[in-house]
Image 1 (cartoon, rainbow, N blue to C red):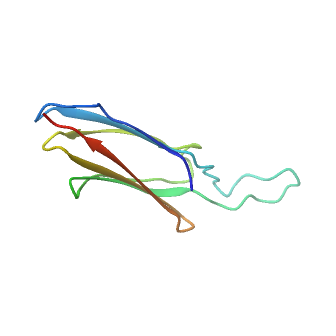
Image 2 (image 1 turned 90 degrees about the vertical axis):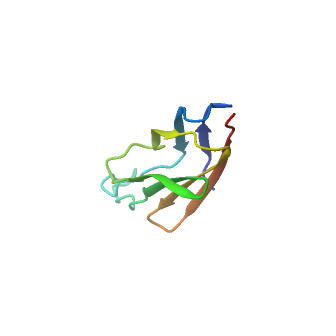
Length: 106
Protein backbone atom coordinates (compact mmCIF):
# COMPACT_ATOMS: atom_id res chain seq x y z
CA UNK A 1 0.00 0.00 0.00
CA UNK A 2 1.06 3.55 -0.65
CA UNK A 3 2.06 5.87 2.17
CA UNK A 4 -0.22 8.82 2.79
CA UNK A 5 0.22 12.05 4.68
CA UNK A 6 -2.67 14.03 6.15
CA UNK A 7 -2.41 17.31 8.00
CA UNK A 8 -5.34 18.90 9.83
CA UNK A 9 -5.42 21.16 12.89
CA UNK A 10 -5.36 19.34 16.24
CA UNK A 11 -8.54 21.18 17.25
CA UNK A 12 -11.04 23.65 15.81
CA UNK A 13 -13.94 25.76 17.05
CA UNK A 14 -17.46 25.05 15.86
CA UNK A 15 -17.96 26.85 12.55
CA UNK A 16 -14.24 27.37 11.80
CA UNK A 17 -12.99 26.87 8.27
CA UNK A 18 -10.33 24.15 8.49
CA UNK A 19 -7.55 23.52 5.98
CA UNK A 20 -6.95 19.87 5.05
CA UNK A 21 -3.70 18.86 3.33
CA UNK A 22 -3.28 15.37 1.90
CA UNK A 23 -0.65 13.56 -0.15
CA UNK A 24 -0.14 10.02 -1.37
CA UNK A 25 3.14 8.51 -2.54
CA UNK A 26 2.37 7.31 -6.05
CA UNK A 27 4.49 7.17 -9.23
CA UNK A 28 1.83 8.73 -11.51
CA UNK A 29 3.19 7.13 -14.70
CA UNK A 30 1.42 8.86 -17.60
CA UNK A 31 1.96 6.09 -20.15
CA UNK A 32 3.96 8.44 -22.38
CA UNK A 33 7.43 7.95 -20.85
CA UNK A 34 9.92 5.27 -21.84
CA UNK A 35 12.04 3.06 -19.61
CA UNK A 36 15.84 2.71 -19.90
CA UNK A 37 15.56 0.36 -22.94
CA UNK A 38 12.97 2.45 -24.80
CA UNK A 39 9.81 0.51 -23.91
CA UNK A 40 6.76 2.54 -22.80
CA UNK A 41 6.12 2.56 -19.05
CA UNK A 42 2.44 1.53 -18.65
CA UNK A 43 0.04 4.17 -17.39
CA UNK A 44 -0.52 4.03 -13.63
CA UNK A 45 -2.15 7.09 -12.06
CA UNK A 46 -4.41 8.02 -9.18
CA UNK A 47 -7.67 8.93 -10.91
CA UNK A 48 -9.96 9.87 -8.03
CA UNK A 49 -9.60 11.44 -4.59
CA UNK A 50 -12.50 11.95 -2.18
CA UNK A 51 -12.94 13.20 1.36
CA UNK A 52 -15.93 12.45 3.56
CA UNK A 53 -16.56 14.32 6.81
CA UNK A 54 -18.94 12.75 9.32
CA UNK A 55 -20.03 10.31 6.60
CA UNK A 56 -20.86 13.01 4.01
CA UNK A 57 -18.68 13.64 0.94
CA UNK A 58 -17.27 17.17 1.15
CA UNK A 59 -14.54 17.11 -1.53
CA UNK A 60 -13.87 15.20 -4.76
CA UNK A 61 -11.10 15.55 -7.35
CA UNK A 62 -10.40 13.75 -10.62
CA UNK A 63 -6.76 13.42 -11.64
CA UNK A 64 -5.34 13.03 -15.14
CA UNK A 65 -1.92 11.97 -16.52
CA UNK A 66 -0.48 15.50 -16.17
CA UNK A 67 -0.64 15.33 -12.34
CA UNK A 68 2.83 15.08 -10.79
CA UNK A 69 4.28 12.19 -8.82
CA UNK A 70 2.94 12.03 -5.24
CA UNK A 71 -0.33 13.96 -5.76
CA UNK A 72 -0.89 16.64 -3.12
CA UNK A 73 -4.20 18.40 -2.49
CA UNK A 74 -5.28 21.20 -0.19
CA UNK A 75 -8.91 22.06 0.48
CA UNK A 76 -11.11 23.51 3.21
CA UNK A 77 -14.04 22.18 5.26
CA UNK A 78 -16.24 23.86 7.84
CA UNK A 79 -15.96 22.32 11.32
CA UNK A 80 -19.54 21.34 12.13
CA UNK A 81 -18.91 18.52 14.61
CA UNK A 82 -16.16 16.43 16.15
CA UNK A 83 -16.00 13.70 13.53
CA UNK A 84 -13.80 11.62 11.33
CA UNK A 85 -12.46 12.59 7.92
CA UNK A 86 -12.13 9.64 5.54
CA UNK A 87 -9.79 10.27 2.62
CA UNK A 88 -9.83 7.85 -0.32
CA UNK A 89 -7.47 7.57 -3.30
CA UNK A 90 -8.32 5.25 -6.23
CA UNK A 91 -5.91 4.46 -9.05
CA UNK A 92 -6.57 3.23 -12.58
CA UNK A 93 -5.54 -0.33 -11.67
CA UNK A 94 -8.27 -0.61 -9.04
CA UNK A 95 -6.16 -0.04 -5.92
CA UNK A 96 -7.98 1.82 -3.16
CA UNK A 97 -6.19 3.53 -0.28
CA UNK A 98 -8.28 4.85 2.62
CA UNK A 99 -7.02 6.85 5.57
CA UNK A 100 -8.85 8.45 8.48
CA UNK A 101 -8.14 11.47 10.64
CA UNK A 102 -10.26 12.83 13.49
CA UNK A 103 -11.18 16.50 13.58
CA UNK A 104 -11.71 17.59 17.19
CA UNK A 105 -14.27 20.40 17.47
CA UNK A 106 -14.80 22.32 20.71
